[in-house]
Structure formats: C-alpha cells, structure tokens
Length: 395
Image (cartoon, rainbow, N blue to C red; front, side, top):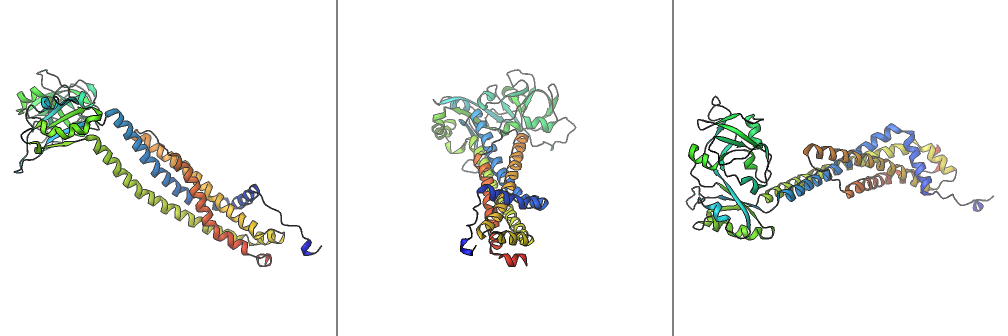
C-alpha cells in the first residue's frame, strides 16, 4: 500500500479527547491535586468575596424592610458663635404637627454618668450616657424590650439599659442596681439591639420626669426621632429643622439613620473589591502552576507522544489531548474552589446571623473562569507537545 493509499486519520470525539486528558491526570494524581489546589484557592476566594457581601446586602435589605427607611433624626448643631445649640422643649410636640409625620419622640441628655456601683472610679464611665426618655420612644424607633419593661411614668428610680450598656455594666437580669449621680437606680428593663439608633444601645434610659426630678435634667430634647409617611420622607426632612426651631432652623441637624447603614454597606463593598483583586492574583498564580505542571508532563511523556504520533495521531489530536488535560485539571480545581467558597460564605453568614446569598453567576462563572484559565495555561504546553516529531520524541 503506498503512502497515498493510507486511510485518513481517525477523528477523536469529545468523549475520546476527555478520556485521553483524564488519563494524564490519573498517572500522576498527587501532582494533579497540588496543581488544582492553586486554582481552587483562587476560585474559592473569588466566590467568597462575591458571596459574603451579597449575604450582607441581603441582610441589610431585610433589616431595612423591617425597621423602615422613614425614620428621621434631628439634633441640635452649633450657633453662629460656635456654642452648642439647644432644641426647644416643645420640639417633639412641634414635630407631631407636621401632616405626614406618623409619630415622634425624643431623648434628652442629662449630662450624668453611670457606674456599676459606688466603688467604681468616677471617671470610669464605660463610654455610656444617661438619657431621659418618654414611654413612646420604642414605638417610634421600632425597638423591643429584651427583658422587663420600658420607662413609664412611675416615680420609682429605675432605668432601662441598651443592649451594649447592659453588657458593659455586666448586667444580665432585672432587679440589679446602677449608680448615677450619687443615687441608686434599679434596672427595670434591657433592650434588644437597635441598628437604626446605635446611641440607644450605649445608653441608660431614665423616665423623663424622673430625670428632671432626680438628675437635674433641663427638659430640652437632645435628639428628636420622627417617623414619616414613606412617600413624604424627603419633604418632612426639608421642613423639620424650621419646625423644631423656627427662630434658628440652621442650628438643627437632620439625618436619616438608614442612610448610615447604606453607607456602611458601600464601605464593605469597596473592601470586597480589594479582596476580589487578591483572589484574582491567587487565580493567576494557580494558572501559572497548571502551566508549569503541563510543561513538565510534556517532557516526561515524550515517548508516549512519539508512540502516538508513530501510530498515526495527528498534531491536532496530540494538542487536543494535552489541552483537554489542562482544562480538566483547572475545571476540577475550579469546582472544588466553588464548593469551598460556598461553604465559607455559608459559614460566615450563619456566624453573623445573615441569610446565605450565593449569586448563581459566581458559581457558574467560577467553574467557567477556571476552565478558561486552564485553556490559556495549557495552550503553550499543548502546542509544544504537538510540534514533537515521532523520531524526536522516541529518540
């Protein structure tokens, strides 16, 4: 049979190419695992960096849906002379006159500090403040009492502790006492955390009239909280300063607490971009590792390449074999990385009390990107293997 009568080379289907690629991985399993590990680390980092902020954003969205974005907070600013301004005593009542306002309440600074007992040094305040409060405060803030009750009109000297204040004072139950301005106050309640009003978490609340009678409180609100209709929040925000203090509206600072939570989420997203870059670097290093492994594999398997070429394998088939091995190696590493990233995201979300949110593009894209990296990393070794002639490979 002459050379021109030789049958055409056999075509390899995708399954055959995949089987040949997997054969190379089976011959050196430990090397394959170590090479895929670099890809897995990079993909796991990318998936976790995408999944954790997504879980945080979902938790924030759920939290704002529960707490509402229609809460406004007004505080006194400074006078033109640089002195601390004051809100009028009737500020809360004036706020309630605004038509779209659903409810309003306030707290007042007593200027006093709280201690666990009278033996604690006077300057050991634990970063806590003592505020006067009215019974409707929790309704406006959407807060809840964890233990006991909230402040009421009872003249009995009692306090309600924010969640952070209770922890710093070492109070875990009701009936204990704290020392304020040379007087003992009984703990009547402990509050749940209040994300929209973190200042309440770090405060000790005393009934408004009790603060006036026992702590010398002057009756001026230090902060006014307002709940407005959802579609009129910005309108209320625009007139709130002039309503609370008609004579000096410029001395009133109005803020929307939910904006602070949203800004915090943006900060976390910025940091996520940094870690995403680090994940990309890890993925690049993994790709270099795969390329190095494939080059070594080509050098070690020269005889196999020569034998296949001598038996009629074309350059294209040899190139496809090694390219398939590189893609499979990276693909398995990517799949392992996705599973690790999902596990890390779920574990961290559970530890933070967030709903685990794994974006589908991150899962699908993680495997796809790893296979793309494998294809790029294996391109040169595959071409190098295909260029070997049978005589050169078998020499």
